[in-house]
Image (cartoon, rainbow over all chains, first blue to last red; front, side):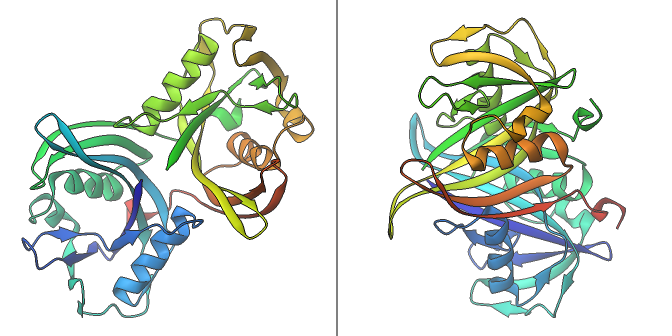
Amino acid sequence: MQRIANLLVVQDGQVLLLKKPRRNWYVAPGGKVEPEESIYDAAIREFTEETNAKPIQPHLKGIYTMVIEDGEVVKDEWMLFTFVANGLTGTPWEETREGLLEWHPIEHLESLPMAEGDRANLLFAVKESGTQYGTFHYTEEFQLLKQHLQSSSEGDVLNG
Amino acid sequence: MQRIANLLVVQDGQVLLLKKPRRNWYVAPGGKVEPEESIYDAAIREFTEETNAKPIQPHLKGIYTMVIEDGEVVKDEWMLFTFVANGLTGTPWEETREGLLEWHPIEHLESLPMAEGDRANLLFAVKESGTQYGTFHYTEEFQLLKQHLQSSSEGDVLNG
């Protein structure tokens, strides 16, 4: 099963997004987890490869199952691991092979064109505490059909 | 890629472990994540199926890549998602098709017979704050060859 790790850097009230030429949709920089690689290493490696900058204090915020459906038929399924980071070191490229890298105010996540599941994930990553889990069902044209989301926070187990 | 979700319940200073008949090794109750299922749902479902009890406040503590090697050859690779929960509702079975369910003081995690990677994961889950990531390399007889572990905690991104 394909596994994708992406990472949203927040710095000075802004987030670094990649504008992909297809559809002009925005995504958080990321890519495929390699065999034997931890998802943490993958998120940092992919972010650095795509931006030329290193994320500071990355932390996992969401683990999602993505399902692509054509009517009743499941065409594809993969996992997405979404990290957030508290700033970066280095200077991100402005343009890459993948698209344009742009800083946007956090609030723009509400309105920029993107997959609706990505919007939910990225808003959770920057605005909510804890970890989110869920499944997103999309058409092959990335229209969101349904979503099922849950979250949890570090409890008081450690004090038990 | 196979995905396994397991869950360690902590209650009154004790943890609920499954003693598997093969090797008499201890594990946290768990099992396979189903297609389209969130890992959170899978952890709760598998725990409940194996114990007859429901975990309270489950929270993801670790995401691991497990690699089985025979010399230079990778024989298998899967992912493990380890949750912790703050107690349970219901009365766990004492014996199941999978093995014996036993409560043990948290400190016994240091010494009970189990896969060494599991020991590291379960100790992190009950003793440390934050989320752990990593890769474990095992022989086909589950002898730990090497491990690579990292962790992160919720930072101050939300206050940025």
